[in-house]
Image (cartoon, rainbow, N blue to C red):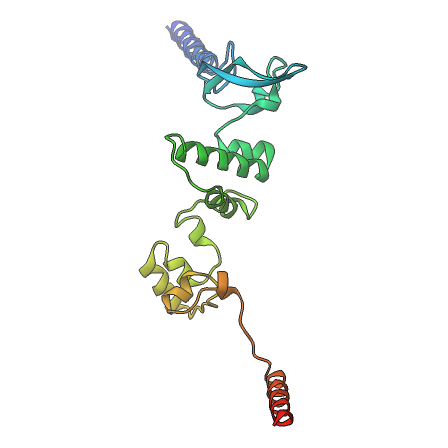
Length: 225
């Protein structure tokens, strides 16, 4: 009896080990790419035009490109069949990781212009460029939200003009914060001229030169009499 019980227990243990092993194998097989590029689920063909320079001049030629659903630039660029110098992605985080902040700014500007101008609308390049500069000037991507730009060390008046107005003013009053009024929002709230355009400088009167000029005018007038 004891021998049968021991044999039965060992068989059950072997079956459990085999089941666990098969589950681990199944899990590994489900995550194993058999072909293609990992994280890229679908590929779509798109025909475009490219400009070719020949001895007869410039002319357009048809060209086929691949649009993918999913991103894996690091692996795609290692494929010798792909022209890595012409690969583009709209994943700004991966662009930042692979190419740096300057390439991220260029990609951000390209995507913004594509979204805004797709229906023929026109927005001056400088407006979008300033937005991209603000989002990337610190060396990383900064969101234009209360969790991004409103966490930058600016004056409380500038920050409260964006979002969370009451919370920011309460915090500023509780901690005795000051605003140097060097931005745009603060002076406008206080009815002052913002330091932009003609407000970027002051006109100063040189009183000594003014007095000399008045003396010269007086002397010239007296001599003429």
